[in-house]
Amino acid sequence: MAAARVLLLLAGRPVSPSFVQSVCRLLGAGPGLGPWPTHCSLKRGRLVLSDGPFPGASTRLPLQRPPFCPFVALDQQQLRTPGAELPTNRGVDLGVAVMLQSSDQTVLLTRRTRTLSVSPNLWVHPGGHVELDEELLDGGLRELWEESGLQLPQGQFSWVPLGLWESAYPPRLSWGLPRYHHIILYLLVVSQESQQQLQARIQPNPSEVSAFMWLGPDVAAAVAATEDGTETPRHLPQELPPSVLTAELEEDGGARPLALPVSTLLRTTPTTAEGKERVSSGTKFALRLWLQHVHR
Image 1 (cartoon, rainbow, N blue to C red):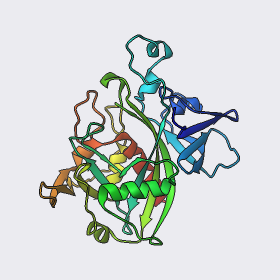
Image 2: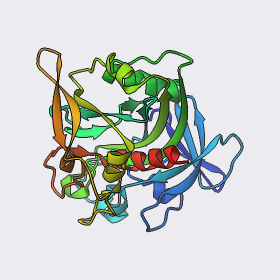
Image 3: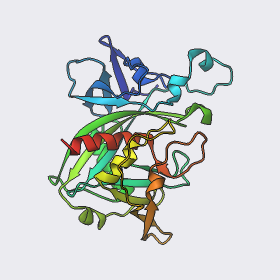
């Protein structure tokens, strides 16, 4: 088995969670929706998590999972069922996502192409896997560049880790057994450049990104308020624009403006794997953390 990318300290003992174990549950998460405060060490290429302080812990972050997390739904008897094609030689992978904030307080979201085999058509923050021996911030900035073409000049941005999300794909057990299991670290990267300045330099990778947008706090609050796993959203602002302006990629590599209905961004996770355009559950969680940070 490859070196563990996510390591837990349980009663002071290091444990590498297996692919089929919920990290939230191992850290003592209760039956509620969370988030649960978690002590973290953000080491090169590895994330160490604990439910209590430990030497080397550098920060304390909220950790959350979706209410329909398949690793919670799976019980040990089911995992031993013949034909259950779940990996036995893999741990939990480490991912990073960048919440890029412009100087005028908007954040970048990109839409994954509909041809991707994992999470197609979802609006997310740019991100992906962290390479071995790669600093987490460096990994996030690399993913930002690979997906959006944006390179941030040194000294012209600040950053802070905001939270952790336990992610599985497929996200629901009813869609099939999980094939991927990640802990995603959300990094808020605040640029000194305006949305207009950043927009002028964006050159999205068409193999991964089909559209992008800049979301302001008002619409972000409405998106973050929609609760996945339920039919009833949280309290929504009284007045929202009917649409938000996005840039959709064309076959020639250019981008055309597109008015995207706000209702598309307010969709919750469907009960079947329909691949509908929507904002991912982890992105909604990250937007809630971002709004808390902005309003401090």
